[in-house]
Structure formats: structure tokens, C-alpha cells
Image 1: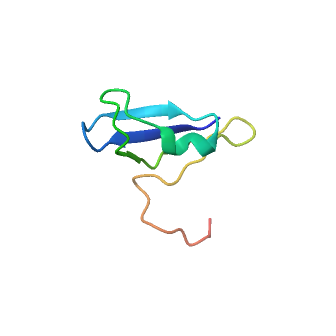
Image 2: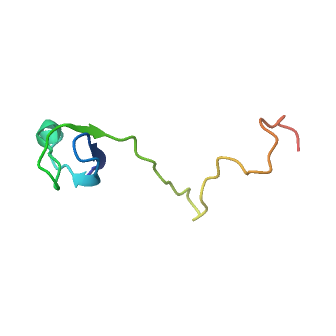
Length: 70
């Protein structure tokens, strides 16, 4: 079940909403001011590889693209 992140354009408050039926996405309103003038934010995701290790997108000390050699 997807949890979507939104921000209200009227009061500026961010909030999350569990949407059980994707056809109801247009019916979401701000829980603070009840406005439907909201924008869905792009959410980040986390994933886990088999074996329990996490996937890394690079380290701050990397110099950019790797050459593929070890």
C-alpha cells in the first residue's frame, strides 16, 4: 500500500497519506486546513539486496564514474 507525501500550497504544511485506492488520489486534502490545493512530492525509497546488505549509490570520497577496473 503506497504512502504518498504531499505539501499543501495554501498553508505550506507537508503531510503523508496512505492511499488504499489509487483512483482516490484526487480526493486527498490537507489535514491541517482541508484545502485540496496540494502537490505530491517525489519520495525517496530505500531497498535492501538479498543477503541483508544495502545498496550504495556512491561515496562522498569517490571521484565520479568508475573505470570498471579493480
